[in-house]
Image (cartoon, rainbow, N blue to C red; front, top):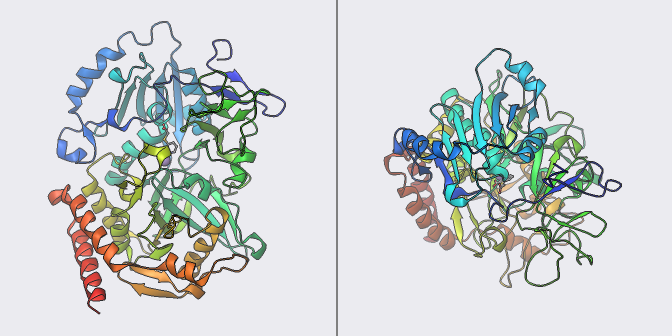
Length: 547
Ligand code: O2Y
Ligand code: MN
């Protein structure tokens, strides 16, 4: 890779065994519009997925594979998603003509001999066929065949399109398997919150992109001096099974982090900044004169003599030096925050599920659902407002149930039904919460400091679970009373706190209308229990406004 410049060597004194990869400039992110769920019946893919019939998809894509790997090295990549000895792990085999993909899969999964050993003579693996093709978006397809547990991807060498163990297998194919086998494949981080007695409570959280999921998973707690510490189990995907004792147990199917570089620094994520100083692949970041990686938001001022992500000399102006979706790929075990239990084969017991979104006005800092069914409704109504980095358009509300809209391998109406069914199988279902770190005041300023201070919200959840924290009932759920939050050491006025926790019935009535429009897409695949929750919320809002 060094010889053919697939990899560029970074400073081996300050960044040992770290390399920079520059992708083709038209291949810099997952491409949802070119991603397909290929089920025999269109309704099984549902209204939120692109669909092709399996035979049509194969007829269209097969010719693109013909001769595509000629003159290239073909890598056969056997890999395990999940800890090598976990009964919940699954095997995939990716065939690829990209050395960069093979090297990245080595970080992101348990790859090679360990996977072959586990596979033995069994044929129980998910095959994935990948080729860079000619990298033209006109001939790019990321096709999933969930009925036969098969993935075909051509025309992209980037991230979620090409590292087939991640979004393609661990979410789209796995979500289908999970429904068949009564478990859950979710777009969730997993963390452990340690309390002063040393007890660790595990939580899983789903957020749409640009909500700081990796930062939350690897947080340095602002309450460390009081004995509250956060441990990382995973930053993106959770596979959750009902354990023999009826609790929900989660494993992280991945072995590494494929995180967004811009905006990552010693304040937003000090743990990952430590982790990426060795054995890391950087993709599309800028490089300093001393061959160190650099991106916007790493330091306040760009150093002189930067090379941009295209490999050209960079000068300050309109264009960013690092691509906004530039990435680091780093083994999870390198983070100082990694839990000593992150590879426990039986998974970790989940006590709280957290949904979240970026809502400037609507949602309070945190609220707790009334019960599992209401919590599923809260997840199904999740939405986030876009940032410029994500879409170019600012403040557009995108509905993203359970942060799974781009990743659910089947009809999302049926997916809500699966969530409801899982709740009734759990002896002691996790509590379900919703958070919003991004509420703003009338001047557009964030009301909550975020980052390490978010541990105060996790602590409130823990206190609710333990029956120690007070809450006020509102139509949307239980909101903390101001005194139930641990705020010592944080300078926040009572007015700001009231604004952070307020529930405005008119704003929620408008939201309820938007939700109703979104749900109408699913027709009769929307479970009755979800309609029931929607009606109940509407009635509670009416009751409050007429009070
Ligand atoms: O653009 C890509 O290919 C990466 S997308 C991604 C990467 C890591 C974790 N999550 C995501 C995502 O889009 O949710
Ligand atoms: Mn993700």
